[in-house]
Structures are given as C-alpha cells and as structure tokens.
Length: 137
View 1 (tube, rainbow, N blue to C red):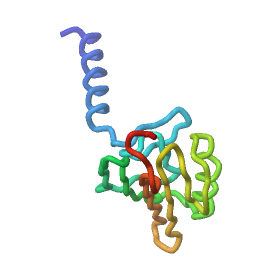
View 2: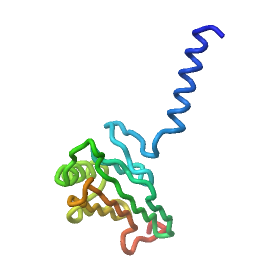
View 3: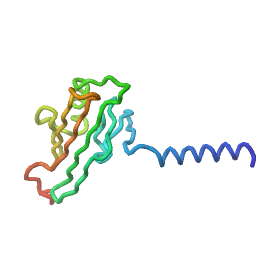
View 4: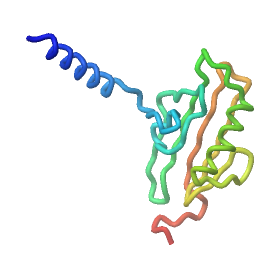
C-alpha cells in the first residue's frame, strides 16, 4: 500500500476513534462544554460533568439532575463559577429569578455550588415550572 494511502487511512481511523471515544459533553462555539442531558447549558470553565446524571421526561417537561466538579488542575472558585452563570445564562434566554435560580420557557433551573468540597462541586437541577401545562397552554 502506498505511503499516501497509509497516511489517509491513519487519519481516517484517528478521526473515527476520536468521534467514538469523545466524551458526552460537546464543545461549543465559545469552547465551552455542555451538560450531556441539557445540550444548551454550558459548563463553567474548569468544570467537568460527572457520570450518572438523571434525565426523566414527564408529561409536564423534563427533569434533569447533574453534577460537575472542578478539574484538579484548575483553581475554579465558587465565586468564578457563580459569576460565569450570572453572565452567560441570560444570554441563552434564562431569566434570573433568585440566587442562581433561573427560568426559561416552562423550565426552572437551579444551580448549587459546594465551595467547601474539594474539588469544588456544582449541582444542576432542571424541572418544569410549577403549573406548567404539557400542551403549552
């Protein structure tokens, strides 16, 4: 087999392996990763989603519980994570309704930062708004 063909084959296999073995979070246009079950909810820089999150589709809407933690090599602080979500989520259509509590469409998102834990942990809870009509009325 000619060298050029071997190089093309190696490149194709490398791309296929990267696609298959890629983590569930995807990189966005700003270089962010996103929660696996909420594809438009970015992870703050330095956070990585932990496995075993929960997704439940109910007639009233989806219920998602997920946790992320700071990568050991990063020094992400609770204040930095808090500032990130206060700045970014309104740009994605979320309206802040309280301290790290947001609403959009018929969903409510709450974010809890455990700054005392090492590594730092961030818990995300997405639920239907109370009284949300599954028919959109």
